[in-house]
Image 1 (cartoon, rainbow, N blue to C red):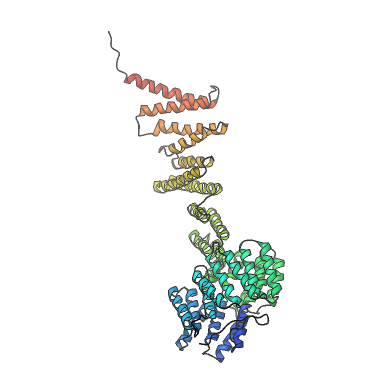
Image 2: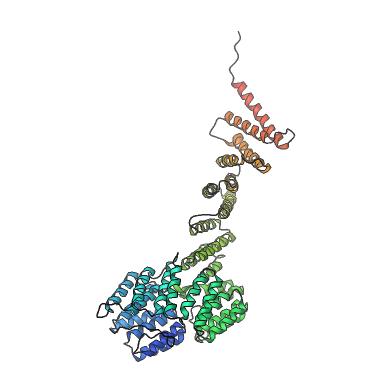
Length: 584
């Protein structure tokens, strides 16, 4: 097979196939994300030369960039059926297998390895263009698709062979981003190397800006986006990037960038969609909806994001039924790798009144689709708020635990407070249900969960009073008539903590706790003789009197009344039990 070496100049960004300039044109159009024009160009190339593997490969890439996985798969399968057994086709087929979710990732890797072996030159050197194509396949899609580590490996090999092609570094940087964690710096380094290879390569500046955007660093995002524009004012994606950034922050500024993007892009379904999307962001929902309907009645009826636009507009217009059905249709047809995390969050919002379980599933999808931890935390907090609003307190506790995992296992005091509050509220709901159903299993299950959360709060922040208070309240809620004595351990723990505090509030809390103990030992205790329980009541009443030693204080008087009553009972019992005195 003829070995193609990619060279990049400021006059022509790509020159991969010297004998097929029209393929170069298609590749260049894909670079500018003019997908409709790229498809038209490459379809003509393949029609003119249906056996050209490079042309077929790039036409498949145009389909993939247009989110049409099915057409790419059909194209590559037909090429193989027609006997075009070529490394480009094998790589394309492997690429599709990684994206459509129906293929075997191991089979895709076998295709890639076969392509590498078959494309080696006479001296056994690897073809950097094939390696780049394999890296592109593994860079594409979500973090759950492809093998980013494998992509990094083959792209490093490609970069070492071909020192001029900036596309290699772009794919390398994207693979690093898919790996997540601390790989953002390596991604930026790869994009910067692309700039070294070609200073007019606007895509590299833009990708660096996107990294800083993901870190909520507007200053550096703007700096690199502007560098992309300076390098190539006709590079449309950067204007679209600005529009998406500002569409919910400054709709007027967003419109300025939208106009620039439209001027530098194909006038097709994508541009029509974003114009309609602008009207949505500007609050003109009916105009946005009208434009979406016009697209639906024309050549854009199968444009995937159209149903998402319908869902947003119907939601803004108060038509929840049509909003939900449109969202369902969008999620049914959109390739998972192309669904933005924000769309999953919106789906969760629509489903919250219908099914919090389904809402939770979509929020988890948003987390899985976004590798930025700060964004994931936002999604989890959204889930917590949704579950709280829907009064599904058990789910709220589950999501609070997920928040802790995202933070490396550590939970802040604020998080513990929210989690304990949710646990207490859940217990109150169960307690209310118990009054009607006497479902002791549910209330005890909720109590044990609440108690474990509150004890964890105490263990993490032993100097803070809230954990102790939550634990006592939860036990008292679960044991509303004091008959079970569930609060005894919690009260002992809190009283010990409060004993070190001389404030009036602490003294009052101890007194209230002791009153619970009085009721329990006076009426309900079953694991000790009654006389011993009454003696326990006398001791507790004595402690309560000591808290308020002034005999004129109503707290002292209430405790003394109990003390006197049970002292009298115990004395009578002891007199009856005493043996008769002997007469000498």
